Length: 119
Image (cartoon, helix red, strand yellow):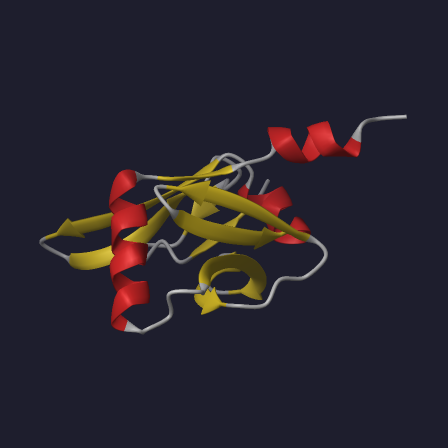
């Protein structure tokens, strides 16, 4: 029988320093100090799946928690299967400022980067 705990520990989502700083700043602006960032994947978007990032203060039994730089990120178990190994970054460039998810499980993504497909 496989050890479920070690399987969960091997799955991960990584936050960059820029993303952690931006999340902390947004939490302060929204007066949501006790909230965490929830990252979810749902069906839809122009490529099949789409990312959702929201502040939340309720956890579900199937949530997996990640922390970086004092920031807590929560991903439900099903979404984590599609996000495993992904890096969440916050990028500011000539096109604007946005969170970007570099997902190694995505076979392709749309031009805006908010949706993806898997092989």
